[in-house]
Amino acid sequence: MGSGSRTALVEDLMERFPHVPREAVIKEDLLRGGVAFDPSALSDNEKGEVKPKSYFIFSFDHGTLPELGEAALRRPPEEIILTGGPYDLRRTVVSVRVNPSSPYRVAANEDGVLGLYLDGKRISDVGVPPMPEYYRHTLSNGKSVMEVAPTIQWGYLIYLTVFRVCQYFGAKEECQYCDINHNWRQHKAAGRPYTGVKDVEEVLEALEIIDRYDTAKASTAYTLTGGAITKTVSGRDEADFYGHYAKAIEERFPGRWIGKVVAQALPKDDVQRFKDYGVQIYHPNYEVWDEYLFKIFCPGKERYVGRDEWHRRVLDSADVFGARNVIPNFVAGVEMAEPFGFKTVDEAIASTTEGLRFFMSHGITPRFTTWCPEPTTPLGKANPQGAPLEYHIRLLEAYRATMDDFGLSSPPGYGPPGPGRAVFSVSSFMDSLSEQAPVEA
Image 1 (spheres, one colour):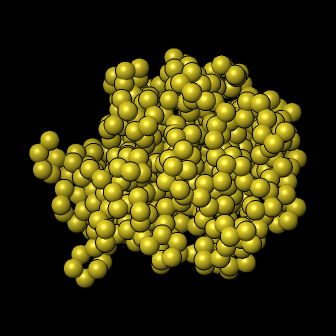
Image 2 (cartoon, rainbow, N blue to C red):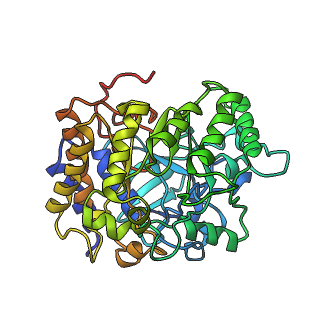
């Protein structure tokens, strides 16, 4: 590929898909392929003015820590904001995924102003998140708020990974695109603090610090998540383990945040427990729609629950939470992972749209995360480039068209929709929806 070829691809897709915001074209490309950081654009970790990347659950990098060079020692920012430039970009929040060999690079110009460069040309200004006041305070045991309760999506979401590993373990059970267990190991190996099971009191103390110093009330929601629990953790099954944090949070801070939980698709009685504990939104992620690919890519989920039962439970959970509050995630792009995935964008989009229609016809609005091919995962190793950018752009088009077909609007708990307004940072689905959506309650 000659110089300027990525620019040509990006501009071609902007022209071919004028209904997809051009901001989303660049954002998807950064999410699927990563971005390089000049040393001038790295943070001073927890001592600086910039909010650093917290590695809140997965690595979301295109290299292991030892391969990231200086970015492993001085963390890049958690997210970046793109504005202006030759494409006149509206404010776009993008989760940072580091790739030292990306054609995209964040660097400061001679005046010290950060910009995003593609194929050597400056294409936008870059804003970085300021260090939040609550990150400057530690828990009584010395742990940092960033380690216990990091915030993402420009401060909108508190991300509580309360169980840092997954009980789907090894090649026969781990999801083939997921590096949660490796990410745990690499942080331990690098001597970084990375708490395996977070103590409920620690979580509450971190939230107290956030509540005290987040005077603008920018943090609006929290997500409770972690690895799948097939047996028990600390003597509790999955519903009880994740649920008991929600119960404690809601008792201490009633109604302060929208409570969300990411867990497996559980039987209805377990889902009811989440609701009883005060959780408002349930994310029973279905990961990939195609039956064959689900079995290959999610062997643990197939073995313990099974695809058909998983989908049945997702639909059942709408009886408990209401369809709008059940928001299953899928990993956009793994449909095209070699050697098992679809060979053409047409086939992949057709399959994924079938899944969207299945859920949306029941009033359930899935969301998606743009696949980051992490190198320690089987699919990342085999597909370092991820899925084609065209797949991601056409998915945004298909997603919005399917929502319109079923008269659905953007799901709750994600902040404002629309280009220039969205804060959801790990895919562009919120950036590409209409701004005319109802205001969140």
